[in-house]
Amino acid sequence: MGPVGGGRLVGFSPKIARMVPGGIKSNPEIALRFVLSHPGVSCALSGMSTIQMVEENAATASREEPLSEKERAQIMAALDETKRLADLYCTGCGYCMPCPHDVNIPKNLEYMNYYRVYGLKEYARQAYADLGVKNIEWITGLKAEYCIQCGECEPKCPQHIPIMEQLEEVARVLGGVGKVHIV
Ligand code: SF4
Ligand code: SF4
Image 1 (cartoon, rainbow, N blue to C red):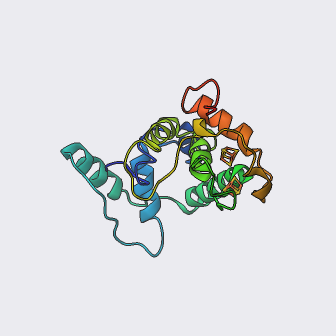
Image 2 (spheres, rainbow, N blue to C red):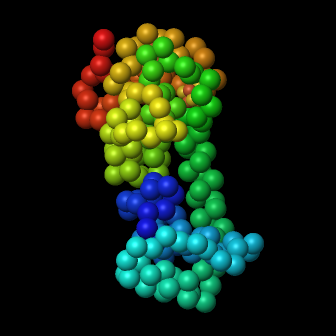
């Protein structure tokens, strides 16, 4: 199978691997098993561009049981816990927006969640690198490093997130930028 989760799951995540009892070979494998284990699903469509992907998918779909009830329950519990952790940081509600300097606050913090909570480091770094650079119609705004720390957004956040501090962390961790870009 090609990259799953809109490309988010292209890289291996040890955190996701640990959610699955007995471990997994790849993210596409567990994604397919997870979908096929849903009682309402009898067919899964998967993009494949190489013979190897076809063979991997055929082997995965040929399993007698995609996931046991116990495995599915353990994965759901781990996902619930991970979602709870992600929401501790930023729920993506967007109440802090718009930023007068065009920083896309929720998107920057979402990428940090992928990095920190889900362990999707490769995806998070690439998505951050593309923000405000690659022409993606539905993702607009600028990277964390363009925050000038005016403070306008913080009082609007119902989660009381220290947005300026977190954006500095995003710029440092995902962008390798020591200091935010003050203009
Ligand atoms: S503190 Fe940064 S992110 Fe918040 S409104 Fe000001 S420039 Fe935008
Ligand atoms: S208001 Fe707070 S929780 Fe909502 S998107 Fe902005 S930073 Fe995230």
